[in-house]
Image 1 (cartoon, helix red, strand yellow):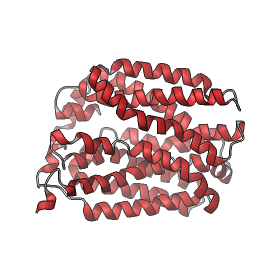
Image 2: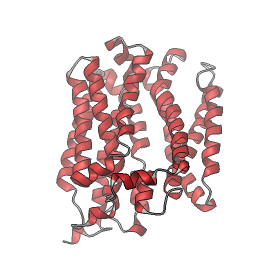
Image 3: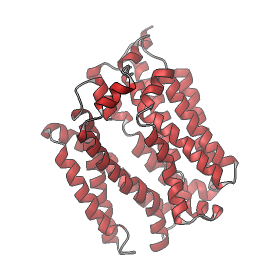
Image 4: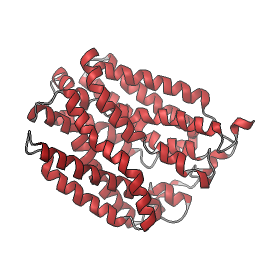
Length: 347
């Protein structure tokens, strides 16, 4: 059939439904900070408990980093992606239906399972629909899933939560995930019977572990982990609360200001990625990104009411966020063995 050819219009429909499914991951992950002022007192949480609620979604993602490729081998790209979206939907439903902090935590763990699966299966689901020399654009479009979802949730979350209650965000995510599940189920298919073999690891677990003896990939992982700790763990989780308590901003304004960092990264990442390709050196960009994030950190939680300090923090940290994101991911396959196995395990 004509519509099942690679690089076709149907391939771009595949990009669209895969993007929508992926987009639901950051929407779920960051639905809590915009309504933190309501969620925290609803369960009597202290800052430590709230921190665990935010980070619990990432724990499963870390644990799934390696076994996801083997899950894909068992149930395929479509099955893995559908399982991921179903987890996001179930996790949101648990938070929407029950008034228990324990159940809320369980829902976050289930959502984390979905996010961990999507990060591997979604780009692979797109990859099989495009020839090697035509994958850059569709994968570049897909790569905006996380920052776009984060920015949108930070901006619409406070208004929806204020109008309909904090659980409305859990219902919104559950309904959108259900729609994404149905669309992906009905529309996604492989362009050929053996297409999945192009992106699925067929090596044994032992062979995969041998590839990971590379010291540099672990150093890169530690540096990228530090970046995530600062940006996702601290800023995206707590900064809007700081702006509300210390600056007196309403939840909508506080969430919008916090989202500007991610918006800056969203704009700059493609540009910086192009620059790193041209200069053919990525390590200096990663190193400089941490100088930016370190410098920005001095301004993060001081000078309440001082707009100069706020602008300096957002500008410097936003640049650091973009630099680290643009340079870290392309390094992974470059420092690993020049094989599909090496590139995949590196990522």
